[in-house]
Image 1 (cartoon, rainbow, N blue to C red):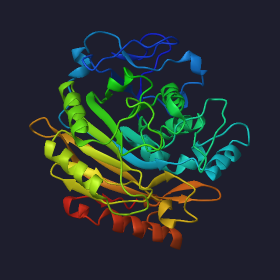
Image 2 (cartoon, helix red, strand yellow; image 1 turned 45 degrees about the vertical axis):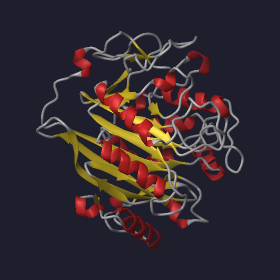
Image 3 (cartoon, helix red, strand yellow; image 1 turned 180 degrees about the vertical axis):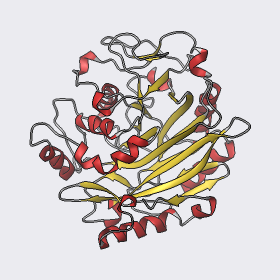
Image 4 (tube, helix red, strand yellow; image 1 turned 30 degrees about the vertical axis):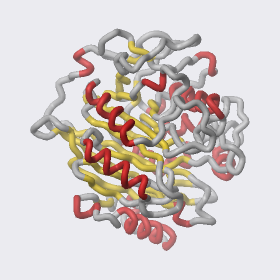
Length: 411
């Protein structure tokens, strides 16, 4: 698990840090021509998650502390045998039942998401970079929390739970992300910032929308980009990234020009509850693969597991299913989820490529709501869990991922 540097005032962390937060006031303008802030990632224990602060204490827009990223950060000496493991997961949906569980797990003294997520924490915390997806905007710290079929707004405690589970960066763009307007996005990004989690896909200001999320992982710069097919409330055009192949390719190229060695795209797309990618997913991912600037696509939105495919040199997980949900009683397939595990290593030319691609099927157990790591069960599964495993395996391998080396972990 990694955690990017966070500061109340000025630069904070051992070593060189080029991103910081300034408390209060308007954030300095960031233009497309400005150097992208490099979020220096250091190993921090989950117990060191920052204590909650009020919203007015955090402006939470990353700013560059110098006009040029120091060479020792942007071009570190990385041992040739260095490997980086990245993990992706599915949608986090705070339904009424999930919110009730979070309050019960906290003994009705606030809310706690860590117990629901505990089943995947060993996997995520062991990764060098854990990538999550936030489906909903956030309510203010004092609430009220709302859930579907009302316009949803998740609680700040979800960000704390995600941080303690081991996630390092989250995509924050979906068809629901504008449901509470710009304030809902601001609350979400502020909460993630306060918990030391990077984010991509939405912005609090037009200036912030020009920033590409760059993370320093083991001395290697990784760009995280995120986009969605559309919105239920259009809002400000700059506040969210829309799916557009040309835009994604241009952003990925810019990230490479600014030093990214690995480019990850979180893509919110597809038909809900359909286990195969639709034309939009297929056409966008083919265009990205043809351009050669993106290494990995992590898909969300469909609420069920979809295939994994290698297109040229680029890997795609079209749909990770759900990470957290209460949909399963009506739609059993929505209880299925997938953690994808991608191990990168530089080849002889210096290009970072996936050298091992694996999946970990997970299952959303309900009442109480808990995540079950099906791989960790070592083949000892009840019938419901076995059915979930079989559905996930069939969906994941349906486009030939196994022929390119993708495999499900059995322990």
